[in-house]
Every structure is written in structure tokens, then in C-alpha cells.
Amino acid sequence: MTTVHYFAVAIAAGLCAVGARRDLGTPPFVVLAIYCAVCSCAWLLFGTALALTAAVGMVCLLIIETDRRLNLIPDTLVLAMLALSIATPFAGSPASSLIGAVVLGLTFLVVRQVGSARYGREAMGLGDVKLATAMGALLGPVPGFAAVAIGGAATLVTLIARGGNQAIPQGAPFGVGLAAATMAVAIVRTLAP
Image (cartoon, rainbow, N blue to C red):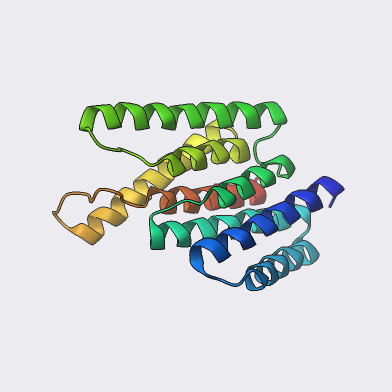
């Protein structure tokens, strides 16, 4: 691992600890210990690529749990994902990472604004927009949109299975599906580059 990798993983670990303490009430040292243990074991056993994937996975798991519990995607965890996007090879190049962040972020922002204007209430939270921006930076534009499609389908199937014939509830935690899909796409891109 290079200095950039260590720096990005350390920043992400600190942001995860702060976010977990504030939003989930988890002691920061517990989050740091688990985060560092998972990343260190992945690095020792499998190398840099899987250590970075494990770091992304830890951030995604915290996003999933926070959004599931609170229907909230904390900025600290989005920033952690952005920090990891600097060190991970998933997007392919810095230009692809920047394009992915801009395209996914703007797409989600437009959908949010159009949906909110159409239905007269908030159609999507800004946390989802920020998470999409971080996903684009982490994965790049094409894999980022693939993760959005997977996450959207998983969220819809989960809501339909949970609600039966009832309408989809307002404020459904879309971040759960987005974060899980981001983790899945990162794993696939690591194992089959």
C-alpha cells in the first residue's frame, strides 16, 4: 500500500468512527478497532486491492445500518466514501472518477427536483443525492449507474415484499440498496477486473 492508500483509509476510518458515534451511538474505538482489523486482515491475507474493498465495505455497512435505523445518510460517511475514491482503482482513472461523480450526482439531483415539483413533497432526500455523487466518484459513471440500477431494483423488491399490495411508503430507505449495490460492484470489480 502507498501513502495515499494509508491516508485515504485512515481518513475514512476516522469519519466512520465519528459518524457511528453521532448517529448510531456506537463508541468510536469499537468502530475504529473493527474497521482497522477488517482492513488489516484483508491486506495481510489478500493484498491492497481487497484491503481497499474491505474499507469500502465497512463504509457501506455503516451507511446501510444508519439509513435502516434513522432513514438518514450521514455526510461523514459520504465523505468517507469520497476519501476512499481517491485511493481505489474502481473508477479506472481520476477523470472517470470525476465524470462519474458529476453525472450521477446531477442525475439524482434532477430526479429529486423534478419528482419534488411533480408530487409537491420531497421525492428523494439530499443524502441519496450525495451518496450517488460519492458512488460515481468511487465506481465511475458506467459501474456507478449499474450499482444504482441494482440498488433501485433491490430496494423496490424489498419494499414490495415487505408491504404486499400496499403503496410504497414515503421515505423508504433507498440508501440501503445503493450502499449494498456499491459494495457488491466494488467486490466484483476487485475480483474480476
